[in-house]
Length: 181
Image (cartoon, rainbow, N blue to C red; front, side):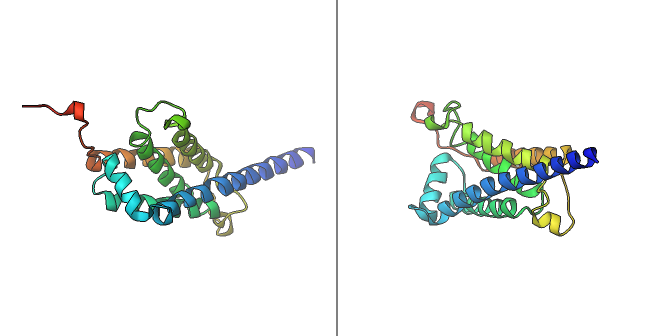
């Protein structure tokens, strides 16, 4: 009897942990995506920012980033389709780390990659943990957790970010990088 209670408590703890992680990560991602569209600068401001980062065509990337953040945020918050929203999050954070946060050190208050690493790591942890009992996935009988979903989220996210960077990252040369003839 004691063994069953202990196992039930452990399962309940994982379910609650997944819910708490989803309830923090999902809405935060959605808010970031929504801000890209409806924030102070709107989509035009996000497009200008992405242009300055070297993501071409900037308008396409601004829309894709906003839509992906909102969709991944909703997917994570509701606990649906694990590990796909986690993979999208890893991809988003990888591109952010390689563009906006590149070369600025670790700490986010100095523009560093600390934030992107924590969000990406949390997404991979959630993919491993699974969405838990309090999720859409559980309602439809879909339970994915463990090493494979975590590796999928990390691998697909990083691979997609690398492909995007290879195809679309074309920063303007810095003044000291131009060669005078």
